Length: 59
Image (cartoon, rainbow, N blue to C red; front, side, top):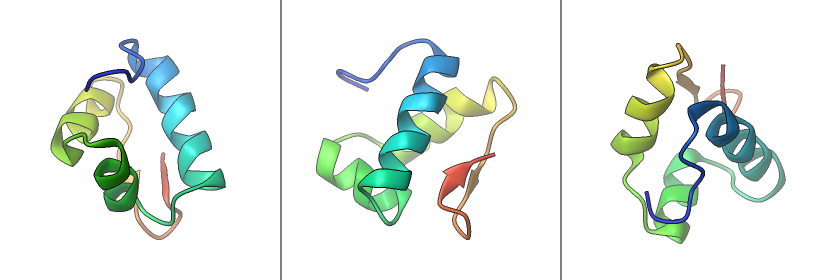
C-alpha cells in the first residue's frame, strides 16, 4: 500500500472520500492506484470496518 495513509483510521477516511467522490467501486480504486484490494480490506478489518459494495464505502 504505497502512498496510502498507514494509520487505519486515516486510511478509512481517505478511502471513503475517494470512493464517494471518484470511484464507483473499491475494485476500480485499487486498479487505478495499483494496490491490492485484500490488503486494504485486511488493514481496515483491524479497526472493525468492512467494505459494503452496495453503499460503496467501508462501514
